Image 1 (cartoon, rainbow, N blue to C red):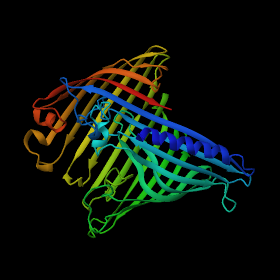
Image 2 (image 1 turned 90 degrees about the vertical axis):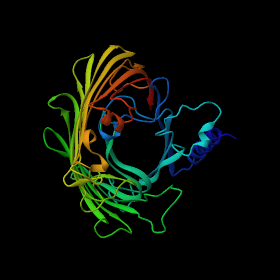
Image 3 (image 1 turned 90 degrees about the horizontal axis):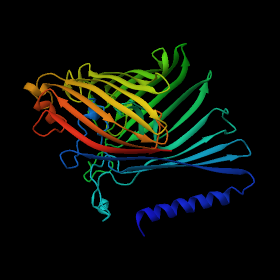
Image 4 (image 1 turned 180 degrees about the vertical axis):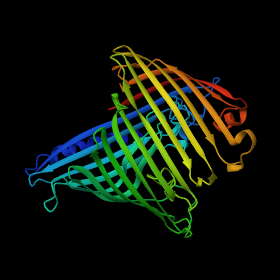
Length: 423
């Protein structure tokens, strides 16, 4: 039986089991199924490409990202009990994230050990327990905790991704929580060291503090890494996020500042198997992104992000990255939008960082994209949609172009159709 058939049978069996259990007098069960799909057909000079043209490094903001066939499903089973308790069981599965190949019906996916089927989240959350307040819940398992990502860069800057446990409650009407999350950097690798360098994050958060112009979220994380020298075995990070209107106009924004040091060098509050660093690694991160509702037909998304070393960052002295991007969108009718993305990205560091010198020390990247999204709902976030686009990337020189995957040139044109759905 094929993998898809096995998965379908497993889901059907689970749903049937839930229906049977719902007959119990002391329990009521419910199911939710959510999903996401990103299928990006993109071509450069008649071939598919693996590069994302610097998008993960805040250099471009177009639609030319990876994942030709990313599929994601989340199944949640909710049970409520007559004694007031409730339970959620959440499983999130994913396939194809980061894959850049265009597969055919021969089933060649199984020959590729990258971007394969993975369980990204599997956790249980319990609430309404008799010895806790009605607004208090506890959870345990593997999950993405408190994720946030830039609107146009798409980069996650806040999360705790791993296996752990936590407690969440209400304090003075605000969401508050504590958690411990662990991740092994070499999990899934073919070669592993005898001594595991397990990463641990101790999280504190307090969200939704009203400040008149919006609400503030506070995050603090202390991180440790096992079997490392004393100068690289811990670190801490913190962030403050303002959730508000679009700078006093119609719409919304998230504006955040974060600090990270040592193991927490990566934007301070971005924890996962990628975390790590010695005491010289120290960074500041600022971002502001959102959508302005200009009129019934016009909307505009924007993002400003700055990410820089205060000493070193990822081993590079004086590393700085920043991007400014806008995406105006015009609603032609209920099923069509006209969309343009404009971005400017910059990166620099001290001479010799990552072995770079000369023109490679500093780079400037411009990105212009035009697209015609066809959709069932022509809102900025209307999905599902099929989005034909042309994306032009221009670097200041060939050295900068080479860093983002442009072959022996300083510019490139990507032609593609991005199909996306979430539900």
